[in-house]
Image (cartoon, rainbow, N blue to C red; front, top):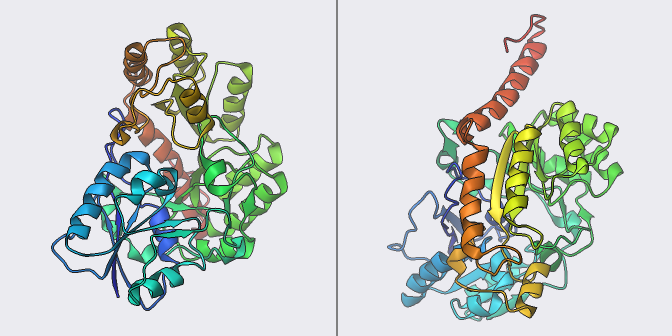
Length: 413
């Protein structure tokens, strides 16, 4: 069976440096596809979708709500030719009713141990409209190495530099953040992968740089320590979401190759100031993820927040506008209050105002979003700030190389 797996493109944020990372969902899903199926993967962000070829079956993997308009277009073109299409991924689960009318079949939930049935059904002409595993998570020990062999890595370079590979060591999240849909998708229970499976997957990744995409590593101190000690021998440099604020954990993270951390910054408190200082004291860079348009945000508080980010010498900042994605507490509240102003999926890219803010006009919030990006990067462009972080990991690599050669001279800074 010839199976085409497509990852649709989406409009990027206006102020972000444009580069494409190898997607994670499709390679994790592809690892669960039976070996008798021939898989061809196309990332619509960097490749052309082969509409002119004949396929037995087409899968569309969607992570973001903003991918859905393009996903529906792709699906429609294949279905018009009589090719059956199946959707899966995060936004397929979040927007089931809309997706259902644009596909032949839907797959909900985790793929491990479940895709053989789907492909057997397709082969035998009895594809079901829905395969629903939302209420039954796959055994975490069954999550093996992702199938990265389907990727064309020549597509994932920026200015000659290979982009990071994505990797996950756990599923689920014990936290329940206001704008996040993870509790609906992966559950509130933290589900760590066995360390032998983590090591097995790391051994298959030839990239020296990783993005550990777990929602938060700060969910269990002992697990974090074990994870970092498992990672250390592989000598990877990695970025990740928050790490426990603990001397032992932070030291273990750095020893394992931690390079920089994504940290949500939601106010100008001493707690946040100290959190950033602590990361930096261990030599970690920090990229702040800043959501604008929370209910306590007005014009003055947003301007003060950006000034604060400059004061604490944040390495990078990514500004987004609060977006009431489906199955989040934010969506539930705003629907009750009648504050949703559009359901146009193309606008759900975290860069456009799609609701009525509590303390500021929608147009002013949109204006301040652009102002925040421009102000934070006025003194130094985003590309230069990114290059500074990248130099850190280059210096680390040079030092390790010299140590491995037995050299004793200092590395030139």
